[in-house]
Image 1 (tube, rainbow, N blue to C red):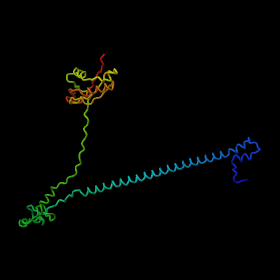
Image 2: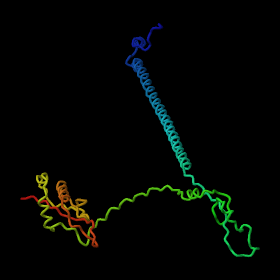
Image 3: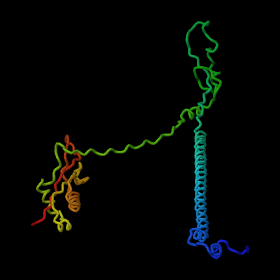
Image 4: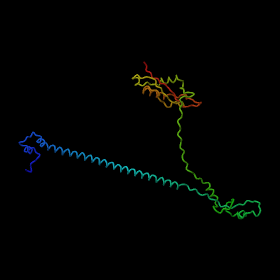
Length: 288
């Protein structure tokens, strides 16, 4: 058999099956074997590539996780080091404060010589330390006169006065200011706030100052917006809020007019002016 004969070629198959029944399945299988082998090799290579990529990605993910763990561990160690370095200055500062504390000088004691009081007693009761010193002995003494003899201390009276007058001032901590509590707002009081001129003047003010919103007019929106506001103890209008809404534009206009109201006569409780909630209906009606 020649070496250059391709056993998988069609010519070789025709030579083998020459004079035989080629419709039989063996001829078809033999001629299609090359394609099957080629497909098998290609599929095998593709499978190996996919498996290799999956293994590579898995190893890469594990590597990234390990690197992240090492990074987190390093950050925790850095934080621990920072905390330790921050605590050190506190100790040094405490030590420095202790060193800077003013030294309290010991009170110096004057040397003194005892001045004996004169008492009439028997000779046997007189002690040696109670013997009366002569005027000549006392005249030459630089010591202070006291209840007993004291050879320890100083003879400078000014020094002892200075030390006694020294005052050690302790550090005074600042007093925290208390926040002022909000003043109480009453819902009902003995004497409710009143508008100058009464309710008629209030309604007249509203009718002359209300500006009907254009958008509400075009849409035919009308109704009564109920507004509440605080009449302060000085009579001014404080916080304003809508308690019953009709339309966004109408609510906004009613709030604006209430804020523009002049000062009221403030409400009173137990004879004192207080903050009181005041309810006011603001009516919007389109002319027919």
